[in-house]
Image (cartoon, rainbow, N blue to C red; front, side, top):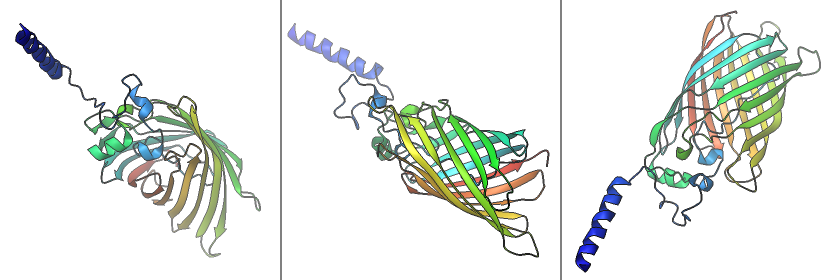
Length: 300
């Protein structure tokens, strides 16, 4: 009788192992998991421990807003030896009041990623597999031109940005499934390089505030100072940009990303204009990113 009971228990345990297997792994790296706390509480909501599109550094502003209706479609590759990531990128800028106010909407509609086991452990995800796809957050930005084309005072523009919680795959540390917002003020000024042609440089800088929700009970949001500087060289209908930007959170959990960008694009009046951008993460953003895209301006 005793042997029969033991055999039944072993059979039940075996079938339980077979039929209860899932993609979740609660033992690695959570050897001290209490069996009750939700898995997302173990994650660190910061750009260092999420995918490249979860908490990116917003693009640099240069004191001027876009004057035209523009649609951008691009492909991006984020190089990381443990997490190579590909994604599409789309954005739309709509003038509301010409030369004064515009609205920008952008999103990563789909992301393809392949995260290896060691990085999965470092990021504290609960899935055994690190390869899949995800849809990204929708961003809505309002740009307001405060000063423009003044002889002595630099151009000045204000940006208000909102990030929705539309991103997917939180358990793979791709998007945070939480909202955020930011605002900044940018200043910029053109300087002619030659009196005989239109070649010039533009110097600009910005400063502001970035905030996003976290998963910590005692710190429900992370507040960060946001900053950026840049220089544009405009020669023969071509613009080359060199920029540095980032933000610095107060929790200090990988929340101080700093990136540098180089970008080249034509400034002619064609409706279709290609561009190329390279971005290198210097701190808390462990990716080298390449973006190639096309700008469509139907009303130019």
